[in-house]
Length: 402
Image (cartoon, rainbow, N blue to C red; front, side, top):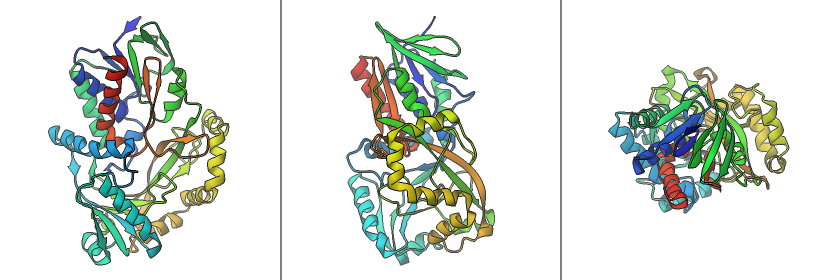
């Protein structure tokens, strides 16, 4: 039987960062990453807007807030050291009406409490200097907010990990996890693998992998939300200098439809947030029956639906209505017209939902015998990936005595 010291399940950016951090902390360890896809970073890592979030949105003191702010510095240094793009284009969060000002003020205070560098509240005149085509009565300006190429970061992490003796096995699906004696046996479709410990960073399948290992996740279920993007036509790129965001709904862990420059020179608009019928459902009509049943049999989904059915209905309508999508964009940049955007890609957010219908707004890490499981790591997980990795390795050293 194959043997290794530590198995990391999942070769997204969080899993690869964790494997690399283990390797650097304990150079003598044999670390093996298992990934069911034929290559690394196929899902959430490669289906996001590439924004390095500064930490404005998150409740002070939460793991999400602390690791986001720490992760920004680590990500910037990593990109600089390895010649990867890291562009500080700046970001405005725009209040388009006076009714949004209390929420904007709360976000600003969160940003200050979290130690976000350089943020300021600006009036409409200053907003026009920063983003001449944006409309709003007031805004938060975050000059240090950046954009990167997260898939390139993940690929570089994989290269460094392999160069220093690590192993990434792609095309391997984990089917079972059992702890016995002094180790863990991981059953896969390519045969079993024995390890001393396991760390799971399984993204959209995080709760399932945790259940395989015997972790108590009965109170949590991953519910997928599809986020769809439009692209601004090249001749309209001048309408957006950096990043333009709305003031989000504080009851939901989503940021609202926004406009984002990318390191590839494009301007993306989106995403919305639609309940997906598959955990890897990037298309509007992608359905996986097992995922649908998994969601519908969880009481939390019905509790969430009862609370947010109006929001959900509107998001679904906007998914099929380009006019509704453009209308949301026009609240931020009135000059954008129907002919100025065309459909782009989509991503799927793995969002943990509690049995009470609460959308969990912090990172969640659970334990099982000889294993750690990242059960909830939505945005800003990519931003925070290097900091999440250090946190997980610290936990592993403490729990397992690595």
